[in-house]
Image 1 (tube, one colour):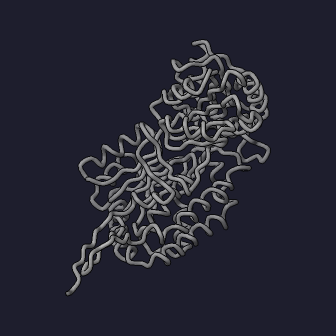
Image 2 (tube, rainbow, N blue to C red; image 1 turned 90 degrees about the vertical axis):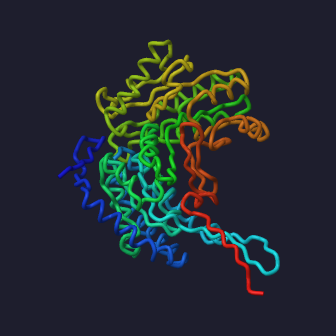
Image 3 (tube, rainbow, N blue to C red; image 1 turned 45 degrees about the horizontal axis):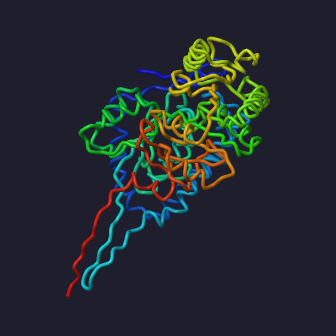
Length: 463
């Protein structure tokens, strides 16, 4: 019997231990999902929407317990974790519910007399969601709700660090009254997930995680002719123009870089500042960074918690050390935070200047509390540097000039262009990336597309 334990980054305690699925368990889950899908797809959409709403209400009603579990499992401060449900998950879920009837409706096609033509959006079957630990509810909601609304059954395999989140979704589905088999949780190792993807009863795969993980998903699905939606790595840039509102830019860039200990897919990982405002921006950025309180995530006074584990923190420490050896200067480092302890997940934020793109910290995803800030002379230099990355999820531009943002944004290789904000997912806009960030599509009017198969009806009527 294979077991998997959640080790809390907060105190190294064992949060929970779960048995991993064996062949018989996997077979039972897939058989139930496949058997339940026909009835679920024929369930009126209004009823599917109502059940999804009840699921969200369950999460909201249990937000205090859920928030504590999130903090204990992955380290985000308790002062912030409730917002993942109350502001994030419910916003995304309810937006997709609000547009479902329109977006899942038949597409009428003009036809000559004696004919009727339309395109119907059929569900795919069963969707496997492989969800990450960093935003365990937000990221899962992106695919879970549209997949269910479209008439698919869902099997969710959550990251080993956040197994309890998957179980909370199961509790929410059960409390909402979902039919048996429509939503199920799978605790499994990598080898088992690979076998599940290769099973003919899985019809689409959603994965959020590393580039290597995404490649493994696509490899497992090769030859099956099913879709694999991926959201992978990121190295999201920020560009502060000379006409920016500096107070706003400083506050939002600090938050965008260090919220969730930098463990955000769309968090800011590198900043380019126009030379005219560079010194003022850096001074303000450093001052605000020093105000973070690093500590126990269950302490309401904590504003920055530990990273997910010691190895992740060590990777960031190595990036910082290598950059300094190559000439970078740390204006703030972990020694400014008493709780920061080498060899542990507790890592205080680091602000680096004198950086360049020969350094790992400016080109490889850090996914931690470190930021490099570079001076640029103009928009063209900023665009060139922002595009100098294998990733492309979001970018942010700080300026008063809307036309400049549209012009610059058109040149940027990215999925989202922000103006005067960052690190936010608007459910009305499509969430996607380019290059090694992956090929997934989530949210917005386009967010149902991955979960349906178009079927054309070409009817010649009786004369």
